Each structure stands twice: as structure tokens, then as C-alpha cells.
Image (tube, rainbow, N blue to C red; front, side):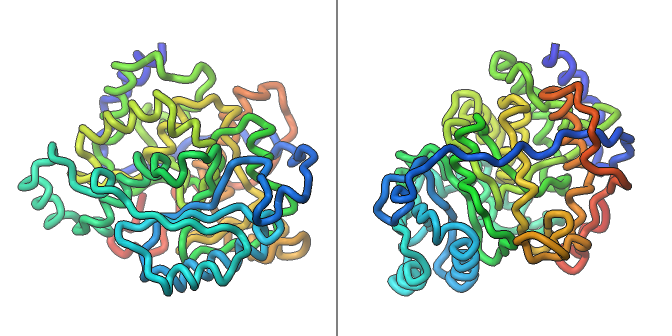
Length: 388
């Protein structure tokens, strides 16, 4: 049934803009109680065998050292100084000794450095170079002219989880330079996800800039038509659509994600990535890992396997998410008045749809108030894009 429904949505999917005008009831389930299993504290020593095979992972450059040191300092203070999960950093060139020392100075945890192989960091042979060069020279969106940005997004979409340094991991927490973490974490999110059968964790959801992905949804619909057996029975696929059945661009920002890597290693995800890769949109357009991960999660995971970490205050230029009431209580130090994404349509829609599947009889409202149907845009950061 879903295949026929999705196929019917192809008409109109190429509209250049995405606007939200839906009206939803505000009845959602609260964040699941964050309980963890008993863990021997000695396992969290730097050389201890952690309760979950997990690491904090980033694709970074040598020039990112200062921004990455800032991120690590905050993660250590907020969480990892008590848990000592290892860090894994990968680069398309060798890391300098200065970089390695600058990172290791900030943590007792093990730190591993790796380099990318040629296959994962190149323009594939099936890409028409003349067409690609024309796209780069005429693109009207941020980073549209850059080879490296497209290679990075392709790598994050299909190759990071396959890097040899991640081979023994069950979970990863993706981190980036120049971000901020505002809240002390008094639990282990890896154990929390493992205990609760969660596969994908996020904390910012917004519409994508549709100029960068004009054919991504049509390509996805074609994939679903060819591989209906890969869809999860209780998936969140309606989260991806507006009231007219058009792709709405909603996606989880993948600069923060905590993931059970069995998801990315699954037949469904890898087949999907290979299909997208062959379509060429990472280069002919500027498909990003965030919409790719998000579409895959909404199609191939059950709703109960996706978790909103609304208790983790986080800033990625130029968007802040901050737990409510953090201005006056709790262990977070951030301004919740400046945090709009909790009330954005992508977040609200996710919460409602998840509840309708996981706990349809719940009636206690989590929040009441206005919903941002069109996400605000930070004009100083993206001057060329005024509306979504």
C-alpha cells in the first residue's frame, strides 16, 4: 500500500519551495524516562571495557583543531570525563602531530586517528564531469561550487560507518568542531539507546534547503517502488510529507546524531545509499547526509526506534536547541527563549506521528502553544536564502 501512496506523491514533488500550513493537535508522549542498567563504574576507566562498544566520531581537518578542542572540552566537562568513551577522528590527509597532541591534551580517553581511502573520497567514475562542472559554476546555494563539500556529504552518507576504525563499534555519537553542549549528562546515552532498542537519536529537526535536493525525493520514491520489502512496518514515512503529499524537506540535523551502527550497516540502508550514489545527486545537486539519513530512518526504522534527545542542549552555528526552563533551573546553561526548533513543524510533526504509532491512546499534552510552520532563517549565515 505504501508503495502506491508514495508513487502518487511524485506529482508536485519538484516544487521549488516548501511551506508548511498544517494544523496538528498538540498531544504527544513525553520523553521516555531515562533509566539505565546497572553498570560497573570501573568499566568507565580509560582502559575499562565499556558497557557498550561506542565512540565519539568526527570527520575533521587539521585546520579544525581549535574548534574541535572547544567541542571536546565541553563534551569532557558535560559527559565524557566520567565515561571515557574513545574518540575517533578521520581526515582525507594525515593528521599533524600538533593536531594529535592538541586533542589528546584534553582527555584521558583513547583517541584514534585515521585517513580516508580513495574510494570513499573521490568523484565516482559514473559522474559526467562536464555536467558536474556546469552545476558547480551555476549553483546558487551555499558551498555549491565546492568539490570538498560534496565529497564530505557523500562520505558522511555512505562511508563513515564503514571506516575500519569503526568496525568494532555498535554505536557512534557524531560530533563536530565549533559546537556547544549546554547540559550535564547524568546518564549514558549509549546504554540508554541499547536498553530501549533505539537505533537513531537526534535533537534538531528542520526543513532542508530544497534548492540543494530537487530530485532526492523523486529518486527515493523510485527506490521504494523497486524495494518495497525494505520498508519498516511501523515507519514514520508520513513525517516526510506535507498535507498535499509533497516532500516537506523535514530532516534531522546529522551534526548531532547518536546511532546504532547496525542501522547504517543494514541491507536496507546500504542498498538505499548505493541507489542514491548511482543517481549522482551528491554531485549534480548537493544532497546532504542529513536528509539522506533522515529519509532512511523514516522509511526503514520503526517509529519506536527513533529518539528525540530534547534534554541535550546543543548549539550548531546558527541554531540552538535548549531544554525548556533551562534559564531558571536544572543543569543546563542556555537560553530557552532563543530556542525555536522545539516548536518547529518538523519537531511537532515527529512527536505527534510517533505517538500515534507507539502510544495512540495517550492524551496528556506535552506542550501547548503556537507552532512555527516556516522555520526562521539566519540571514547573516545564509543571505541567499530568505524563505523555505
